[in-house]
Length: 233
Image (cartoon, rainbow, N blue to C red; front, side, top):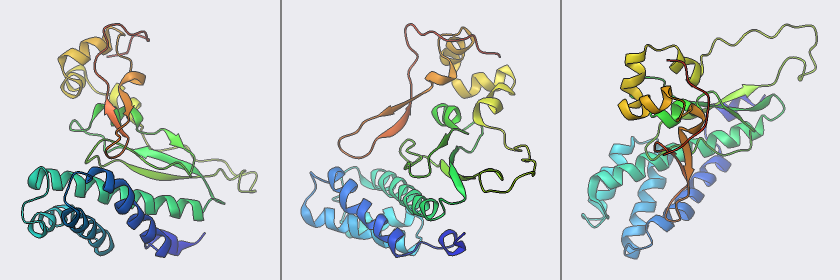
């Protein structure tokens, strides 16, 4: 295993970060004056490379563009935070690819709390191939991909018992909560739909396409009609 790949963003990783700012963000800034768009890209790249807090990057964008950034500080913060997180994910993907000999994939990791997005809770614990980008959660989403190692047998080491996982995934965590906390997280309408079987957890998330920026996972509205098992409360 190349330990260096896990401790720093190498040249290839930084190039991937720059590529994101010059390709994806260009679509978002298509309606901006050329000098404003260039300033935003420059500050994003600068922030990535220096490890700057997204709030500081957003403030620099506003100062440098002299208030001409569409949407003001809050919009700049959404772009800065989302692109900083996505850039880190792009660098992490490179690290996974460089260690494909010991990894089988990555697991979607959501910070499980009553403040967490229900779409992200439903995705927590799902495993994806190492080459799959992501997690592509919602704007400003904090989810991350946790590397999943191959089994001892897959690594050619036989006769060793696999230790049980100590991690509780999102669906298991949610099912363990009391009804009041579940209703607090879902809201009354979605909670009623969930307990009646019209809104199973498999329907909580939808990947939305966005021509202007990036595809992202969104919380699915309550459908008028939906099949599915009756969920335990």
